[in-house]
Length: 522
Image 1 (cartoon, rainbow, N blue to C red):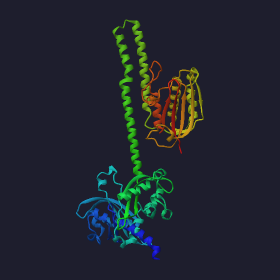
Image 2: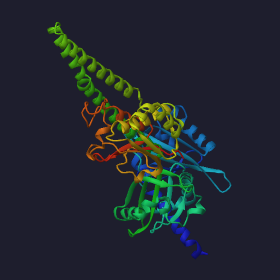
Image 3: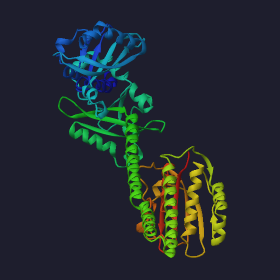
Image 4: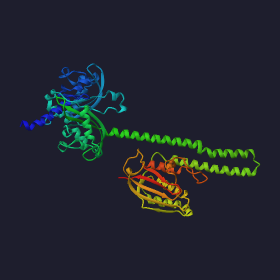
């Protein structure tokens, strides 16, 4: 009988020794009335009392006078007994009278008959978080070895850890195989204890992390340095991901040999998503600042150019109003410049009306959009004898008006920049963003509808592929091809509004291809 229970006893011994030496958390065992029955190193470090001077004292000694007057400690025990646990943050007292901001979870402990036998109280000093909570720096916890005294309360200490739900607390052997599993691990990772105990903890890691042997590397760091800290995406039983912050601590026997590891994981998915949203906001803000710079450039250069001409020719008329030929020629120049300025202003207004995001996005059939655009451009298509061939196009989620504007600009450009009879080919495919060159970092990876507009026009040098999408940037002189230099900038902004992407490829006098990517809805 002894031989069959020895492995369990050894695992339990390591499990309880683990709790005793935790320094970053105050872990206290209370009886039903709130009297302190056990005390770990973290409690001594955080609250300042030696073990022998605090055991047998009511835990209300850590609360401010006003909290004690309001019976807060008793209310917390009552709520934990009723709801199995209670969490709270507030100012607490150390032995020397100084205050610290404590984050506390009190968990009710029960015997085999589900009768209340006491409470576990886990407290962390969150003073730094309280004083600078926007910094989001406090998400690591350290577990260390325990001492022999923990064996006095094996059953209740075991229940204390197993019933903690906010942290996945796992005991691993020297090879990373799971030996113990608490309620928090079940809640966060989705496995029942009997489904996971005995398996290697690498099951929680994504395939890419397993291929680079990240789990084994973390164990090696913990083995050599005492502990390993890491944050990254982890996998639940159902295949969904969560952002986990983990601390792996090496556990040692009395001879200093590593006998296993404790692994504490916290689900920080909300924090990660908030950080990602902030990063996305900063990227968008930078893009908006760049757009403001382009508008400033337009106001100081492109819009002032026709204005200067108007003023110059008006001054010439004023100086010699009797010269009919001069007046006629100047008025013609003024009219041309005014038309140019009007077109620029309309283009700027059109660009500015494209808001940060598209309007109402609905299922839009791009075949219908194409039919409407070719109908609007019918006279130009007939005049240039343009040929348009197209695949069957997909239905995408888009702002219909902006999708129409996109198709209009790209087809109109293909016809305008032709040096011979225009031939336009529109193709469609479903592709992975990972196969697309120069995919923007701020866009998610996934499947996209790829629409390609290819033509046989004058093309361009590939080194200008990014420049052509900038506001008021032109590769040709105005007397060669009309336009304001806004059309492709509008196309880029439309795709930004749809969380999509557009880029171009071209060769001089051999045509150009514009690649448009709409997210594929799943």
